[in-house]
Length: 302
Image 1 (spheres, rainbow, N blue to C red):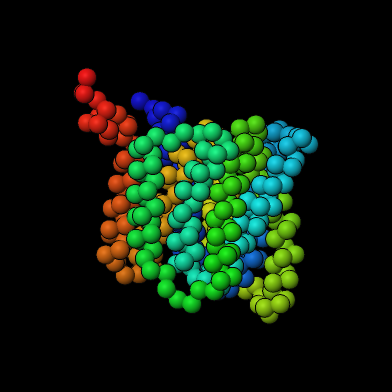
Image 2 (tube, one colour):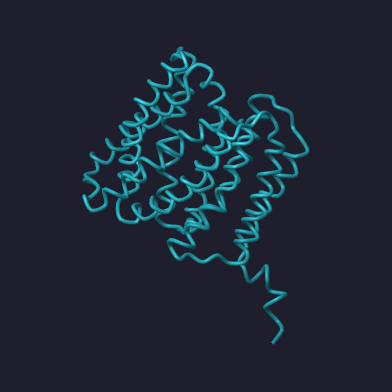
């Protein structure tokens, strides 16, 4: 017996955020040799070529002129500025603090979905969301380190801009095939990322050093972590409420930490165990029908 459409979308969302979690591990291998903004250009350039090529083969056409402003917003704000700000936040704050701020994405995505799309949140969704965010914060732990005001600004800016843009991606994905939306948005971001990365490398004196051993992780980041994951995310957004999509976000730091333990031999901490339990509990709450959770309060009084 096949999966229902709802279950398929949930599987897609779970796979997507797990892929995004793996990006942090792959990035640790690549970023010492490839400047972050140039890697951003590679991600968007390769992804846009692959996705727009697929769109052309399928005869999907182009985004109509009347939707050009919304596409520009997605490409400039959502893909380019939010990702560039996240990288700067990691550089001038630290990775842990950036991850902690990013863990708040479900709250902001849900807030914008309620305000701009008129979506409704059930009680169990609010409970699940809160539990998951707390679990993600526990996994990440105390960010510590030297955190500058500029770094904090970049992290918060990235969080708000991506959460807001997610709503516009959902609108476009409802009108066009997600392959076309994702490829077009990333094409705009690639055009902006190239000059930015070249200026950044000139100012900082850094250079690109891609050795044969880095080809596989770079390809994984560009193809799987960017083209495939964002395509899956946009496809799920087209068929699922943004608030429900957002509830899967806390699986991202859980995956990142788990892969760090398995592949990079990082230490298994109490924070990870407790946080993982909370995130998994949130997923269970999200999956259980609301009437089962609140039956005692609402059910048999009559």
